[in-house]
Image (cartoon, rainbow over all chains, first blue to last red; front, side):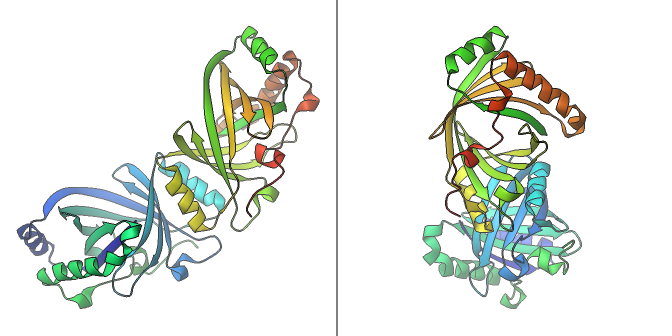
Length: 181
Length: 181
Protein backbone atom coordinates (compact mmCIF):
# COMPACT_ATOMS: atom_id res chain seq x y z
CA UNK A 1 0.00 0.00 0.00
CA UNK A 2 1.15 3.54 -0.74
CA UNK A 3 0.16 6.30 1.64
CA UNK A 4 0.04 9.75 0.03
CA UNK A 5 0.21 12.13 2.95
CA UNK A 6 0.95 15.75 3.83
CA UNK A 7 1.32 17.21 7.29
CA UNK A 8 1.27 20.78 8.62
CA UNK A 9 1.63 22.42 12.04
CA UNK A 10 -1.58 24.23 13.02
CA UNK A 11 -2.75 26.61 15.75
CA UNK A 12 -6.31 27.29 14.72
CA UNK A 13 -7.82 23.85 15.22
CA UNK A 14 -11.47 24.95 15.53
CA UNK A 15 -11.30 27.05 12.36
CA UNK A 16 -9.85 24.13 10.38
CA UNK A 17 -12.47 21.68 11.66
CA UNK A 18 -15.20 24.15 10.71
CA UNK A 19 -13.82 24.39 7.18
CA UNK A 20 -13.38 20.63 6.83
CA UNK A 21 -17.03 20.17 7.78
CA UNK A 22 -18.07 22.84 5.27
CA UNK A 23 -16.18 20.91 2.56
CA UNK A 24 -18.15 17.76 3.41
CA UNK A 25 -15.79 16.02 5.84
CA UNK A 26 -17.53 13.96 8.53
CA UNK A 27 -16.20 13.35 12.04
CA UNK A 28 -15.31 9.65 12.40
CA UNK A 29 -13.74 9.26 15.82
CA UNK A 30 -11.33 10.54 18.41
CA UNK A 31 -8.74 8.15 19.77
CA UNK A 32 -5.56 7.70 21.74
CA UNK A 33 -2.53 6.36 19.89
CA UNK A 34 0.81 5.29 21.28
CA UNK A 35 3.57 4.51 18.79
CA UNK A 36 6.62 2.58 19.90
CA UNK A 37 9.37 3.07 17.33
CA UNK A 38 12.47 0.97 16.83
CA UNK A 39 15.75 1.72 15.11
CA UNK A 40 17.35 -0.78 12.73
CA UNK A 41 19.75 -3.59 13.52
CA UNK A 42 22.20 -3.24 10.62
CA UNK A 43 21.32 0.30 9.57
CA UNK A 44 20.17 3.59 11.10
CA UNK A 45 16.54 4.13 10.07
CA UNK A 46 17.08 7.89 10.51
CA UNK A 47 19.52 7.69 7.60
CA UNK A 48 17.64 5.17 5.45
CA UNK A 49 14.34 7.00 6.10
CA UNK A 50 12.58 3.80 7.14
CA UNK A 51 10.45 3.17 10.23
CA UNK A 52 9.44 0.17 12.29
CA UNK A 53 6.73 0.72 14.84
CA UNK A 54 4.19 -0.96 17.11
CA UNK A 55 0.99 1.10 17.26
CA UNK A 56 -1.47 0.93 20.12
CA UNK A 57 -4.60 2.28 18.46
CA UNK A 58 -7.01 2.62 21.37
CA UNK A 59 -6.27 -0.95 22.48
CA UNK A 60 -5.93 -2.54 19.02
CA UNK A 61 -2.32 -3.29 18.07
CA UNK A 62 -0.40 -3.20 14.80
CA UNK A 63 3.15 -3.71 13.62
CA UNK A 64 4.09 -1.40 10.75
CA UNK A 65 7.04 -1.07 8.40
CA UNK A 66 7.41 2.18 6.46
CA UNK A 67 9.74 2.48 3.51
CA UNK A 68 11.65 5.64 2.49
CA UNK A 69 9.64 8.68 1.31
CA UNK A 70 9.08 8.63 -2.44
CA UNK A 71 9.19 12.34 -3.34
CA UNK A 72 10.43 15.68 -2.04
CA UNK A 73 7.15 17.29 -0.96
CA UNK A 74 4.87 14.75 0.64
CA UNK A 75 5.34 11.98 3.17
CA UNK A 76 4.28 9.40 0.57
CA UNK A 77 5.85 6.02 1.25
CA UNK A 78 5.26 2.31 1.22
CA UNK A 79 3.53 1.07 4.32
CA UNK A 80 3.03 -2.56 5.37
CA UNK A 81 0.85 -3.07 8.43
CA UNK A 82 -0.25 -6.22 10.25
CA UNK A 83 -2.69 -6.44 13.13
CA UNK A 84 -1.18 -8.26 16.11
CA UNK A 85 -2.78 -9.69 19.22
CA UNK A 86 -0.27 -8.58 21.85
CA UNK A 87 1.77 -5.37 22.12
CA UNK A 88 4.20 -6.30 24.91
CA UNK A 89 5.13 -9.68 23.45
CA UNK A 90 5.76 -8.15 20.01
CA UNK A 91 7.87 -5.47 21.67
CA UNK A 92 9.90 -8.20 23.41
CA UNK A 93 10.39 -10.15 20.16
CA UNK A 94 11.71 -7.04 18.38
CA UNK A 95 14.09 -6.29 21.27
CA UNK A 96 15.35 -9.91 21.37
CA UNK A 97 16.02 -9.68 17.63
CA UNK A 98 18.17 -6.61 18.24
CA UNK A 99 15.95 -3.65 17.29
CA UNK A 100 16.58 -0.65 19.52
CA UNK A 101 13.51 0.87 21.12
CA UNK A 102 12.96 4.62 20.99
CA UNK A 103 10.87 6.73 23.38
CA UNK A 104 7.18 6.38 22.38
CA UNK A 105 5.10 9.03 20.62
CA UNK A 106 1.66 9.57 22.20
CA UNK A 107 -1.16 11.55 20.66
CA UNK A 108 -4.88 12.19 20.62
CA UNK A 109 -6.09 11.86 17.02
CA UNK A 110 -9.39 13.25 15.74
CA UNK A 111 -10.32 11.71 12.41
CA UNK A 112 -12.47 13.32 9.71
CA UNK A 113 -13.27 11.69 6.38
CA UNK A 114 -14.60 12.62 2.96
CA UNK A 115 -14.62 9.84 0.36
CA UNK A 116 -11.10 8.38 0.33
CA UNK A 117 -9.48 11.38 1.98
CA UNK A 118 -8.71 11.23 5.69
CA UNK A 119 -8.00 14.42 7.63
CA UNK A 120 -6.51 13.85 11.08
CA UNK A 121 -6.03 16.49 13.75
CA UNK A 122 -3.24 15.28 16.01
CA UNK A 123 -2.49 16.62 19.48
CA UNK A 124 0.99 15.19 20.00
CA UNK A 125 2.48 14.98 23.51
CA UNK A 126 5.24 17.59 23.73
CA UNK A 127 4.83 18.80 20.12
CA UNK A 128 1.37 20.38 19.81
CA UNK A 129 -1.27 20.38 17.07
CA UNK A 130 -0.90 19.07 13.52
CA UNK A 131 -3.14 18.37 10.54
CA UNK A 132 -2.49 15.35 8.34
CA UNK A 133 -4.22 14.87 4.99
CA UNK A 134 -3.99 11.37 3.64
CA UNK A 135 -5.16 9.09 0.86
CA UNK A 136 -4.07 5.48 0.41
CA UNK A 137 -3.59 3.73 -2.92
CA UNK A 138 -2.58 0.20 -3.83
CA UNK A 139 1.00 -0.46 -4.99
CA UNK A 140 -0.22 -0.83 -8.60
CA UNK A 141 -1.72 2.68 -8.57
CA UNK A 142 1.68 4.29 -7.92
CA UNK A 143 1.35 6.29 -11.19
CA UNK A 144 -1.58 8.19 -9.63
CA UNK A 145 0.62 9.42 -6.78
CA UNK A 146 1.25 12.94 -8.13
CA UNK A 147 -2.39 13.44 -9.10
CA UNK A 148 -3.47 12.54 -5.54
CA UNK A 149 -0.76 14.72 -4.03
CA UNK A 150 -2.14 17.66 -6.07
CA UNK A 151 -5.64 16.87 -4.82
CA UNK A 152 -4.36 17.07 -1.22
CA UNK A 153 -2.42 20.28 -1.95
CA UNK A 154 -5.61 21.85 -3.39
CA UNK A 155 -7.45 20.91 -0.22
CA UNK A 156 -4.69 22.47 1.87
CA UNK A 157 -5.03 25.67 -0.15
CA UNK A 158 -8.80 25.69 0.41
CA UNK A 159 -8.09 25.46 4.13
CA UNK A 160 -6.03 28.67 3.81
CA UNK A 161 -2.84 26.88 4.78
CA UNK A 162 0.30 27.76 2.86
CA UNK A 163 2.27 25.01 1.13
CA UNK A 164 5.34 26.38 2.92
CA UNK A 165 3.97 25.03 6.17
CA UNK A 166 4.30 21.42 5.02
CA UNK A 167 6.48 19.33 7.30
CA UNK A 168 8.05 16.14 5.97
CA UNK A 169 9.59 15.16 9.25
CA UNK A 170 7.96 12.50 11.39
CA UNK A 171 6.84 13.26 14.93
CA UNK A 172 9.84 11.24 16.01
CA UNK A 173 12.20 13.47 14.02
CA UNK A 174 10.38 16.62 15.13
CA UNK A 175 10.91 15.72 18.75
CA UNK A 176 14.59 16.00 17.93
CA UNK A 177 15.61 13.01 19.98
CA UNK A 178 15.63 9.41 19.04
CA UNK A 179 15.87 8.19 22.62
CA UNK A 180 17.87 5.24 23.89
CA UNK A 181 20.07 4.21 20.98
CA UNK B 1 7.19 -18.83 28.49
CA UNK B 2 9.55 -21.81 28.72
CA UNK B 3 8.87 -24.84 26.59
CA UNK B 4 10.31 -28.07 27.99
CA UNK B 5 10.41 -30.40 25.03
CA UNK B 6 11.98 -33.64 23.81
CA UNK B 7 11.83 -35.07 20.33
CA UNK B 8 12.54 -38.52 18.90
CA UNK B 9 12.44 -40.09 15.44
CA UNK B 10 9.82 -42.88 15.29
CA UNK B 11 8.77 -45.62 12.89
CA UNK B 12 6.04 -47.37 14.83
CA UNK B 13 3.44 -44.60 14.91
CA UNK B 14 0.41 -46.83 15.57
CA UNK B 15 2.10 -48.62 18.46
CA UNK B 16 3.03 -45.30 20.12
CA UNK B 17 -0.47 -43.88 19.71
CA UNK B 18 -1.91 -47.04 21.23
CA UNK B 19 0.39 -46.68 24.25
CA UNK B 20 -0.30 -42.96 24.65
CA UNK B 21 -4.03 -43.73 24.75
CA UNK B 22 -3.43 -46.49 27.29
CA UNK B 23 -1.58 -43.94 29.48
CA UNK B 24 -4.61 -41.61 29.36
CA UNK B 25 -3.68 -39.30 26.47
CA UNK B 26 -6.66 -38.03 24.47
CA UNK B 27 -6.61 -37.18 20.75
CA UNK B 28 -7.07 -33.40 20.36
CA UNK B 29 -6.71 -32.66 16.65
CA UNK B 30 -4.83 -33.22 13.42
CA UNK B 31 -3.61 -30.20 11.54
CA UNK B 32 -1.39 -28.83 8.80
CA UNK B 33 1.43 -26.52 9.81
CA UNK B 34 3.76 -24.50 7.59
CA UNK B 35 6.70 -22.78 9.27
CA UNK B 36 8.55 -20.03 7.44
CA UNK B 37 11.90 -19.51 9.13
CA UNK B 38 14.20 -16.51 8.84
CA UNK B 39 17.89 -16.12 9.55
CA UNK B 40 19.20 -13.12 11.50
CA UNK B 41 20.30 -9.73 10.22
CA UNK B 42 23.43 -9.17 12.30
CA UNK B 43 24.02 -12.76 13.40
CA UNK B 44 23.59 -16.30 12.12
CA UNK B 45 20.74 -17.92 14.07
CA UNK B 46 22.30 -21.33 13.33
CA UNK B 47 25.25 -20.24 15.45
CA UNK B 48 23.35 -18.35 18.16
CA UNK B 49 20.75 -21.16 18.36
CA UNK B 50 17.85 -18.71 17.99
CA UNK B 51 14.87 -18.93 15.64
CA UNK B 52 12.44 -16.50 14.07
CA UNK B 53 9.46 -18.00 12.35
CA UNK B 54 6.00 -17.33 10.94
CA UNK B 55 3.71 -20.29 11.58
CA UNK B 56 0.63 -21.05 9.53
CA UNK B 57 -1.33 -23.24 11.91
CA UNK B 58 -4.21 -24.47 9.77
CA UNK B 59 -4.96 -20.89 8.66
CA UNK B 60 -4.20 -19.12 11.96
CA UNK B 61 -0.91 -17.21 11.92
CA UNK B 62 1.77 -16.56 14.52
CA UNK B 63 5.16 -14.88 14.69
CA UNK B 64 7.52 -16.64 17.10
CA UNK B 65 10.95 -15.92 18.52
CA UNK B 66 12.84 -18.79 20.13
CA UNK B 67 15.88 -18.21 22.31
CA UNK B 68 18.87 -20.57 22.62
CA UNK B 69 18.32 -24.02 24.16
CA UNK B 70 18.84 -24.00 27.95
CA UNK B 71 20.35 -27.44 28.60
CA UNK B 72 22.17 -30.29 26.85
CA UNK B 73 19.40 -32.88 26.64
CA UNK B 74 16.08 -31.27 25.86
CA UNK B 75 14.95 -28.63 23.41
CA UNK B 76 13.87 -26.39 26.32
CA UNK B 77 14.07 -22.70 25.39
CA UNK B 78 12.37 -19.36 25.76
CA UNK B 79 9.54 -18.86 23.31
CA UNK B 80 7.67 -15.62 22.61
CA UNK B 81 4.68 -15.97 20.30
CA UNK B 82 2.20 -13.41 18.98
CA UNK B 83 -0.88 -14.12 16.90
CA UNK B 84 -0.90 -12.06 13.69
CA UNK B 85 -3.66 -11.33 11.23
CA UNK B 86 -1.75 -11.71 7.96
CA UNK B 87 1.03 -14.12 6.99
CA UNK B 88 2.17 -12.61 3.69
CA UNK B 89 2.35 -9.03 4.99
CA UNK B 90 4.35 -10.13 8.06
CA UNK B 91 6.66 -12.08 5.76
CA UNK B 92 7.17 -8.94 3.66
CA UNK B 93 7.89 -6.77 6.72
CA UNK B 94 10.57 -9.23 7.92
CA UNK B 95 12.15 -9.32 4.46
CA UNK B 96 12.14 -5.50 4.19
CA UNK B 97 13.85 -5.35 7.59
CA UNK B 98 16.60 -7.61 6.26
CA UNK B 99 15.78 -11.06 7.65
CA UNK B 100 16.68 -13.81 5.21
CA UNK B 101 13.93 -16.31 4.43
CA UNK B 102 14.65 -20.02 4.56
CA UNK B 103 12.76 -22.80 2.74
CA UNK B 104 9.58 -23.59 4.73
CA UNK B 105 9.01 -26.68 6.87
CA UNK B 106 5.63 -28.35 6.28
CA UNK B 107 4.12 -31.06 8.43
CA UNK B 108 0.95 -32.84 9.47
CA UNK B 109 0.74 -32.76 13.27
CA UNK B 110 -1.47 -35.08 15.35
CA UNK B 111 -1.89 -33.78 18.86
CA UNK B 112 -2.59 -35.88 21.98
CA UNK B 113 -2.91 -34.43 25.46
CA UNK B 114 -2.89 -35.59 29.07
CA UNK B 115 -3.07 -32.86 31.71
CA UNK B 116 -0.33 -30.33 30.83
CA UNK B 117 1.64 -32.73 28.66
CA UNK B 118 1.27 -32.51 24.89
CA UNK B 119 2.39 -35.39 22.68
CA UNK B 120 2.61 -34.54 18.99
CA UNK B 121 3.15 -37.00 16.18
CA UNK B 122 4.66 -35.07 13.29
CA UNK B 123 4.83 -36.23 9.70
CA UNK B 124 7.38 -33.80 8.31
CA UNK B 125 7.72 -33.28 4.55
CA UNK B 126 10.98 -34.90 3.46
CA UNK B 127 11.98 -36.03 6.98
CA UNK B 128 9.43 -38.60 8.14
CA UNK B 129 7.78 -39.33 11.49
CA UNK B 130 8.68 -37.80 14.87
CA UNK B 131 7.25 -37.74 18.38
CA UNK B 132 7.48 -34.56 20.46
CA UNK B 133 6.69 -34.51 24.18
CA UNK B 134 6.16 -31.05 25.56
CA UNK B 135 5.14 -29.15 28.67
CA UNK B 136 5.12 -25.35 28.97
CA UNK B 137 5.91 -23.39 32.13
CA UNK B 138 5.95 -19.69 32.87
CA UNK B 139 9.31 -17.86 33.04
CA UNK B 140 9.07 -17.74 36.85
CA UNK B 141 8.81 -21.55 37.06
CA UNK B 142 12.24 -22.03 35.44
CA UNK B 143 13.46 -23.90 38.57
CA UNK B 144 10.98 -26.69 37.77
CA UNK B 145 12.60 -27.27 34.39
CA UNK B 146 14.64 -30.37 35.34
CA UNK B 147 11.78 -31.94 37.24
CA UNK B 148 9.53 -31.60 34.18
CA UNK B 149 12.27 -32.86 31.89
CA UNK B 150 12.50 -35.99 34.06
CA UNK B 151 8.74 -36.42 33.86
CA UNK B 152 8.97 -36.35 30.06
CA UNK B 153 11.94 -38.76 30.09
CA UNK B 154 9.94 -41.18 32.26
CA UNK B 155 7.10 -41.03 29.77
CA UNK B 156 9.53 -41.71 26.93
CA UNK B 157 10.79 -44.78 28.79
CA UNK B 158 7.22 -46.01 29.30
CA UNK B 159 6.76 -45.72 25.55
CA UNK B 160 9.73 -48.10 25.13
CA UNK B 161 11.79 -45.43 23.41
CA UNK B 162 15.45 -45.20 24.35
CA UNK B 163 16.86 -41.88 25.62
CA UNK B 164 19.58 -42.30 22.98
CA UNK B 165 17.00 -41.59 20.30
CA UNK B 166 16.48 -38.01 21.51
CA UNK B 167 17.17 -35.44 18.80
CA UNK B 168 17.95 -31.84 19.82
CA UNK B 169 18.15 -30.57 16.27
CA UNK B 170 15.23 -28.65 14.80
CA UNK B 171 13.50 -29.90 11.66
CA UNK B 172 15.28 -27.06 9.89
CA UNK B 173 18.68 -28.35 11.04
CA UNK B 174 17.72 -31.97 10.34
CA UNK B 175 16.92 -31.11 6.75
CA UNK B 176 20.58 -30.17 6.52
CA UNK B 177 20.00 -27.12 4.41
CA UNK B 178 19.12 -23.63 5.48
CA UNK B 179 17.96 -22.59 2.02
CA UNK B 180 18.53 -19.22 0.40
CA UNK B 181 21.05 -17.41 2.61
